[in-house]
Amino acid sequence: MRKLRERFERGDGPLPKTLAGALESAAQPPSSEPPWETRLRQRQAAIRRTLVVEALRLQVSKADDDRRLGQDLEQFIRSLPPVLTRREILARALAVDRERPQPARDRSR
Image 1: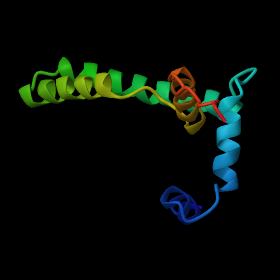
Image 2: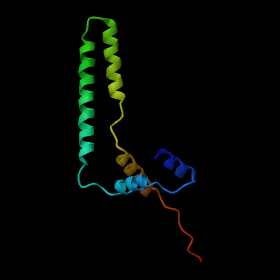
Image 3: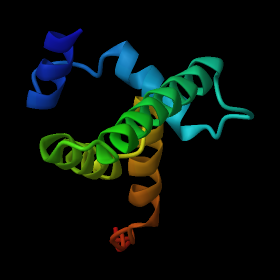
Image 4: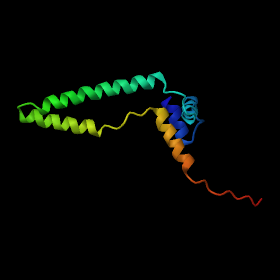
C-alpha cells in the first residue's frame, strides 16, 4: 500500500483504490460518526483522563521532582493535538480546497 501511494505521489502510478475510497468517504458528510471513530474518541478520552489523574497525584506529592514531573505531564496533556482520523483530515483538506477561489477559465475558443 505504501509503495502504491508513494508511486502515485511521485506521479509514476495511478491513484490507489484505498486512497480513492478514502477521498470519496471524506467528500461525503457521514450521517453519523462511524463506530470505530466513536471508540477511538472514547479510548483517547480515557487515556487523557488517566494522565490527568496521574499529573494531579504527582503535583500534590511532597517531593519536588514529582511535582515538577506532574507539571510537565500537565503541559504535555494540554499540548496534545485533537484526535483526527484520516477521513477527517481529508475532509478538512477538501473543504479548504473547495473554499479556495478557482481561477477564471478562458472561454474565448
